Image 1 (cartoon, rainbow, N blue to C red):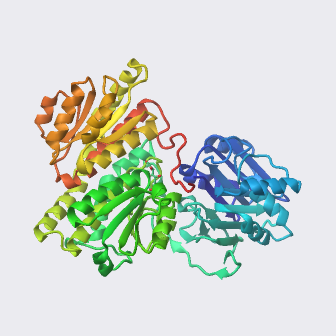
Image 2: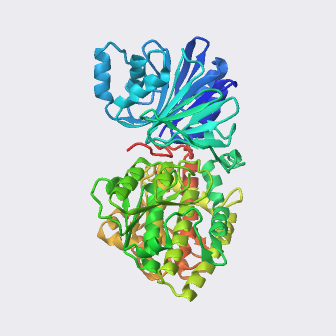
Image 3: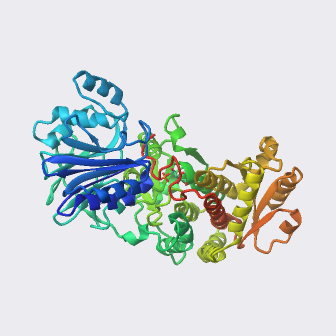
Length: 619
Ligand code: F6R
């Protein structure tokens, strides 16, 4: 949802800003721009389309200067074009602003600014910020920003420069993420840490309702009342190379292949002598023993991880657990109270709806546990306790490794709670622990089958594309599963639709007869997850029902399963044998790869699919 950067130092700002934007492009990529203070002027360049268009334009006509701001956009107000691209300037082009978020009262502000004679160029909400700062500017940029913020309603992270103050970069934050990179003789602002990691690992996470004024040698943070706030930088532990492709064609493929190692790292970090501990967790054992119910709240892929978590928790901890999407939870007066543990799952830790759900839950007295990937993210800081997934930066918009890392945390949390609340025998606990420890190796074995230049899933994807064209582009996908793999059916469908734009639905296989079976003719390809489980026979019956109606079936089965061979399925994908409880971690791998290869067959932009952004910081 838009990435912003700001730089003040001695380097050419253009280079720093473009590099920073390239690390933030996952947040939005429909247009990009920079504004740089050059001598006594502000110069800017904005281009519609991906960042590379802006980069090539600036190569031909660079803007010199050591203070500037930049933006990569995911459009909310106004179509993606050059005029609506950020930065936005005031009437006299003396100041420039970049913004991530939504100004909810921009229409009334715009009306009154227009009455006062301000001239607007764009359809964006952001432009009102530039004109308000212009209105209040009396030689002190920080003071004008403070006055402006008093009038804004909504969410924002902003960065502002003024041509009269070539030694100042001002930023502010209300609900959209903003970090400060602290350097030597230079300082940075950005939506996310990767944007500054080429230059510094010292980062200050801004809190809500804070304003920062950066000079080349100083960082001054104040709250919205103007009171000084003292903060120490944190050191980012990971390296920028983790945010690079390492020879893979796409980030998504690289991230899929990282999953075995991430799972093994999670187990190594959290399990010692078969005892589970969550170092950073601030919720006490006593509190964990006392909860009467668990509510899991999340969006998209994180929701699917949470849904799997619900199956695990109910089965092993025997505690009533329910799940809701954050956007529903926040508006329906949910029944949570001091006896409820609310688990918010979020890779970015910044998703606007999940953050609002967290605040709603806390306001009702519930204890909130965040399962987050991004260190220092808002959800991780506002929750009562956090368990980090430590999956490293996830750059591809379609989430893969964050999902399996979230599942791994749910397995650990489930076993931890089951032991603590004495709902599991020692024997069963030991068995599950030893099964879980086998999973990273099995995931790596499975992935090694797909490493060669050409593999079965690529062939299936090719086959699908041919079929799709034969059927006049009418083919769709249906994903069916039961029990703990049902969330994987939803996840497989989500992966496919978000990167290949092919209609795909996930369904609990038992619901087939209640509607979706009407879809079955020779058009849809039906992915049936039929690994060894207590509902295996039922899945075989579902496969027969599909075959009887002419459907094309891709079966996902356990290695060595002979019965599946007699089902007349069209394509077979095998996954290693493991206890049913852990099978989602294996089943999801070919689902992710299938989506990847289908999108690649169709030639789509896999890492940056249309209309999406990685971090959804607006409602
Ligand atoms: C799908 C995907 C999204 C996110 C969702 C929640 O591949 O990435 O569905 O899972 O937007 O994002 P987080 O986990 O950052 O809250």
